[in-house]
Amino acid sequence: MEKHKKILEYAISSLLRRTYRNLAVIVVFSFMVAVLSSVLFLTHSFKVEALNVLSDAPELIVQRISGGRHDLIPADYMKKIKEIFGVGEVIPRFWGYYYDRMTDSNYTLMGIDKNMRGLELLDGRMPTDSGECAIGKGVSDVRSAGIGGKMYLINSRGRVIAFKVVGVFTSGSNILTNDLVLLTKDSVKTFFGMPSGMATDIIVEVNNDYEEPFVISKIKELLPDTRPIMKREIIRTYDTVFSWRSGMILIMFFGALTAFCILAWDKATGLSDGERQEIGILKAIGWETSDILELKFWEGIVISLTSFLSGLILAYVHVFFFGASVFSPVLKGWSVLFPQFRLMPYISLYQVFIILFFTVVPYVASTIIPSWRAAITEPDSVMRG
Image (cartoon, rainbow, N blue to C red; front, side, top):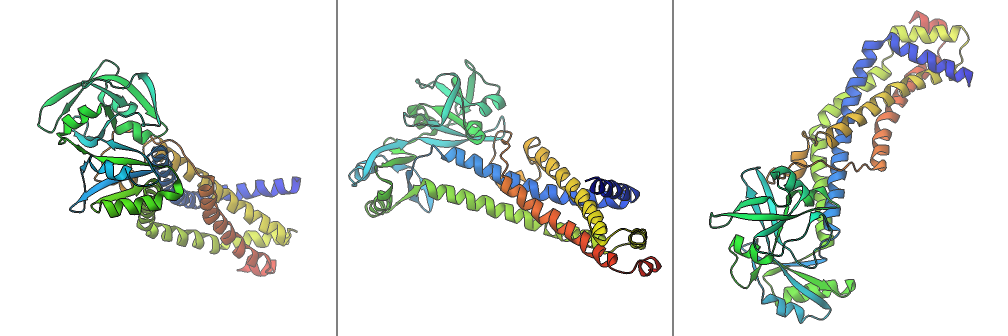
C-alpha cells in the first residue's frame, strides 16, 4: 500500500508540474460533462414530473375531434358510452387554458369534482361557491395570493372576474401545482362561455383493464368523431417527446463533443518529449513497466474524475438551482408558458454511470496505451528521443 501511495503522490506532483496544460483539459472536459449531464438530468426530471402528474390521471379520456382539433363534446355522448359493456362511471370534465397577462403565464382552469386525486391542501378548503377558487402553490407564489386574497381573471366576454382564494394545494408534481386553478364546474362553464350541454372531455372508468381495447373500439364505432386516449399512451408520448428533444440538444453539441474527443485523444496519445524522457529516467532508476502504467493510470484518473465531478456539480447547479435556463425552453416547448418553478432533483444513477463510463474510461485508456508503448522501449532510446 505504501508503494501505491507513493506512486499516487508522484502522479499528482507530475500533474502539478504541467498545471496549465492539464487545467485546459480539465476545463474542456468539465464543460462537456456538464452539458451531457444537464441534458440527461433535465430530461429525467421532466419525465419524473410528467409521471407524477399522470399517476392520478384517468385511465381513459374521450375527446371530440372537429377539424382535426380538440373540441367541446356533447354531454349526451355519455349515455351511449354508459351502455357499452364493461364501462363503469362516466364523468364529464370542464376545463380550459387561460393566459394571464400579469405574469405572462398560462394557467389551467378546471372544474373540481369528487374524483380529483393527487392534490393535497396546504391551507384552506376546496371551492364550493361560484365566486371561490383554490390555487396551486406556484400560482399562489407568482400572483402573491393567499387564503382570503383575490384572483382577478378576464373571462371570455372581456369582463374582469374576482375569485376569492379559499384554498392552496400541492401535489407530487411541481408542474401540476404551478399552473392549476380549481373552480366549481358552473364557474368554469360560465367563465369560458361553454354552451349548455357541452363538456371539455369525458372520463370513462373501465371495470377491467383487459376490456379497455374493446371499450375503445366500441366508442369509436358508436361515436366516430371522438378520440379515446389511454393514460399509458399519454405517458409513452411524453417519454418519446422528451427523449427526442434531449437527443436534438445532444446533436446540437455533437461538434463540441467531437472537438473535445480530439483534444483529449491528442493530449493523451501525444506524449511530449519531456514526458518520454521522464518515463525513460524512471525506467533507468529501476521502475518497472507496471509501475509506469500505474503512474499514468493515476494521472488519468485524477484528471478525468476531477473533470467528471466538476461537470456533475455544474450540471446539478445549472438544472436544479438555475432552472436549466439554457436547455429548459427546448424541452418544455416554446409555445407553453409556465409560472416559474424549481425542478425537483431527480437523478438517475444509471445515467450517471453511463456518463462516467463514456467519459472517464476512454480517457484513462487513451492515457495508458501510449505510456505503455514508451515504457516497454529501452530507456536510453526513450531518453535520446
